[in-house]
Amino acid sequence: MQHIPAKKAESEEDSLTTPYRKPRILWASLYSLLDTSSGAAIDAREMLRQLSFNGYDVAIAGATIFDSENGLSRLPEQWNTNLNPDKVCKVIDTPLCHQLVITKSTNRAVITSLELDQWYALYVHMLDTFKPDLVYCFGGMSFDLLVPDEARQRGIPTAFLLVNGSYQGTRWCRDVDLIITISKANAEYYRQKIGIDLTTVGIFIDPSVVQASQHTRRNLLFINPTLSKGAGVVIQLALLLEKIRPDITIEVVESRSNWPRLLNYVTTQLGSPRDHLENVLVTPHTNDMRPVYGRARVLLAPSLWWECAGRVAVEAMINGIPAIVTDRGGLPEMIGNAGVKIKLPEICHEKPFNKLLNSAFLEPLVKKIIQFYDDELLYSEYVARAKLVAERTHSLNSATERLISAFQPLTEKRAGDNMHKFVPERPHKQEQLNESGER
Image (cartoon, rainbow, N blue to C red; front, side):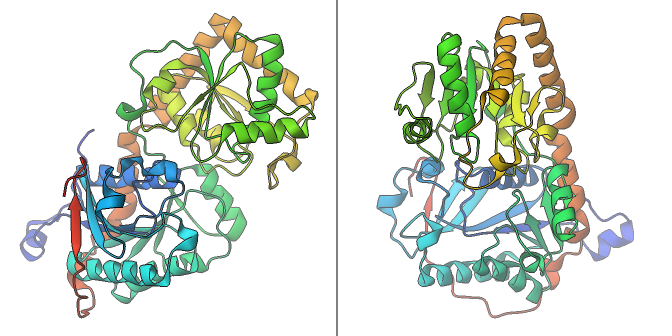
């Protein structure tokens, strides 16, 4: 990773009056950035990692709230047994340090008022002690609105990370100075939807974490099987391929959902319930996707809801894997000309995303999949395209430069040196864990 230095004072006179120090950024959200089941958490964590590598002081105020229990794998194994609820612990995630309020449940829906109060006290304490120049956050529930509100009371600007299409109205961004997103498609979506401006910085993916060292290029790959991600489409494709090309294996990587349950649900709708398909390999949720991408020939990402970007599509590009995606949201932008974009009936994009397709839509798609297996010359061309898209469109260095440029007008105000004076909260009792789980 190329070092991108934060801006220093430009003149000798300025340097005498305002000595250089690292800009300070405080990430503040109940949701844990250690969550491997949340694309938004993964995006934010990698942004903060790159900022830390490039001359920023970064602090994190969070809680043990996760999208799914499958996402807890980055927490030390002993966290749930060694730590008592109502305390704050530190989890070392080099170069980051997460200060987390320990909640009784990892489910946001059952968080208690006491736990919310404890997290808010931690946030205020870190504002008063860390003295950030910028608060960075996401979340659109009522409690989340207190984060930018409190920062504004102290004269600290706030940036907001927006990586989905579910936000309504403008109350959530009333006290926000800058809205960051990762795709042009999402920026345009919100400009048309509610008339707000978003700054697009690109997606943050460290190639070393996802790039396979070897490729056998055998499997059709489908990640995170949910109805909203197009599980119904994939199941119908698998049923057809099972009959005409049983040699093609579909690898399904579970994240938040349960493949057998979805398979039974969809096949019941089709009139022939199944709980197993011979041509489907189910892989449990994993932190290391490199072996999975090493086995993949083509990525299936037929999402039915609004995808801001689609991390899996970019990870496929990094691995030179062509993708088949729906023609909406940020997915087409992520793959460029390195795949196939399919148009589905509008009713398929409506909740609960359980409408099934007829053969008029499925058969051409099956033919394209088979072509990717049988026509090596065509396939090689798409592999080369994918690698070029990754190089030209999804550079981590370029995304970091854009993020720093977006933050710089706010961080160079040094709000942390001049924020309004408040009586600091009493420090929380903390327990510290390193990556091995030891205190």
